[in-house]
Structures are given as structure tokens and as C-alpha cells.
Image 1 (tube, one colour):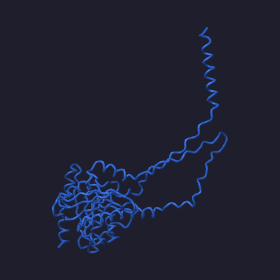
Image 2 (tube, rainbow, N blue to C red):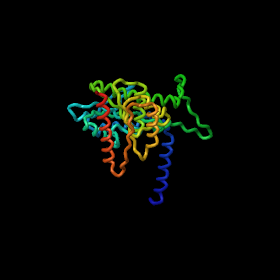
Image 3 (spheres, rainbow, N blue to C red):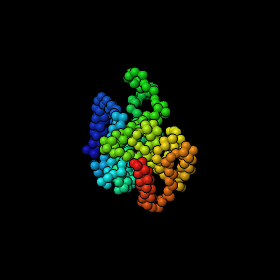
Image 4 (cartoon, rainbow, N blue to C red):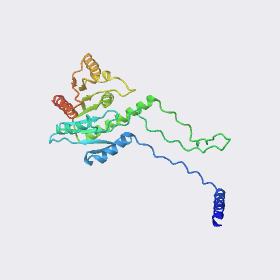
Length: 308
């Protein structure tokens, strides 16, 4: 008898519980979660470097109201020759394993302080889009409705591409200036700018725009111009008339380097040196040592002559 009665009883109990649940008021939808502002990729890389590198090498500098990481390495010498400020290229951090990172150590062993800067994320490398706030679904038969945003005055127009490029350039310039202020605090008399890739463009642009009295030497390695910026390096570098070491790899940058050398000859640049290197992809350590050796030789010749 129990076998024939239990199933109907269970069904009745389940139906009753469902009715009770249906009578309960629906839970209010959860409010949208506010997401914290997303950091630049360069800031994430700086945080990672802070975990990996000795605290003594880390310097927090300020430029344009924002703080950024710079890596300081003092010269391994009782009589340092001066300071080389290193500007990484696009997508690189201040301890990048090619060019920038190796030069930090190799130049310190050659008697030079180094200060390697983290630069803002390049334009054209946007952060992931924010997740839009949840919209309440429409009831059956009704069109979806959204509440208008609260009135906060006129919405400012989106910055033009030119305004964005200008603002980005100002951020970079402010960071280079902060590095010079740091050098002044260390009482460093001789300062050299060295840019890799697009960092070479920013170094030359800073020298052309600010004309700092304490810098008389410029080093460029695999120089390039960031997308959307001008003028080209053959127009920017020769008029500086500063001691310039223009280092390129013969299999990759020969044509652009030749154009810069021709422009320097036309303007009778007094101290422009084009230095071609052989790429050694099978032996990256030897390639980095070759680069450091040529830079050390250039610094010995040009800074020594400038001090006379």
C-alpha cells in the first residue's frame, strides 16, 4: 500500500513548495560593480621589475604629476665618467633583455652610471575595452529601455589623434627632464642620452625642443620613428650638431642609416658617426658584447674630447 501512496504524496509536496517559492518577491538585481581604472602595460611591467630587481636599483621619479620607475646603476669606478640615460623602444621595459638591459651592466663596468627609464605605453596599443554596465532586459512585447545618464554638463569631445600624440610626447619629455633633474641631484656633470628604437626619436626630439645645456652627446641604436610622428630622423638629428653615434645593423637598417648619413654630410655635421654592426642571431651574448664595446669606444673618444 505504501508503494502506491508515496509517489503522489511526494508530487503534492513538491508542487506546494514550488507555489510557496513563486509567491516570494523576486530578489532585486545586483548593482553593477565599479571596476578600478586599468593600468598601463608599462606600469604592470614596472611592478614586476620591482619584485625582481634589488631595491637599491629602483628609483621612483615624478614627471607631470605621475610617478614612474627608473633603474639606477652606479658606475663600478671611483672616478665615474658620467651618466648615460637609457630610453627603451616601444614595447620595451627599462631592463629589456636586448640592448637596454645588457648596457646597464656593461656600461657600469666601463665606469658609467646608467639610469634606464620606463616610458608610457605607445599610442595605438589600447587597453582592453571596459565591460558595459548591465542593462535590465525588456519585458516580453516591450522594446528595451535604458535610462539616460545623469546630467553632468556637456560631454567633453574626444581628443583628436593629433592631441593624443602631443599629450603622449609631453609625457615622454617630462620623464626625460625628470631624469636630468635626478642627474643634477647626483651632481653628475656629463650626461649622454642613448635611445633604442623609438627611444632614439624621443632622445633627439627632447634635445631639439629643450636644448639642455648639460647634454652634448647622443647615441642611437636601431633608430626608428614611432607611427604618426614627425619629422623623420634625417631631418631631426643633423641640425642638432651634437656628437652623435648612429648605430645600426647592416642587415636590417642600412637604407635608413644611409639617408641619415647623407643628410649629415649636407649640413656639414661636425661630429656624426655612422656605425654599422653585423647581427649575430646565433650568439646573442656576443652580439650584445659587440654593441657595448662599440659604445664604450665611442664614449671614450667623444666625451674625452668634449672634456678637453
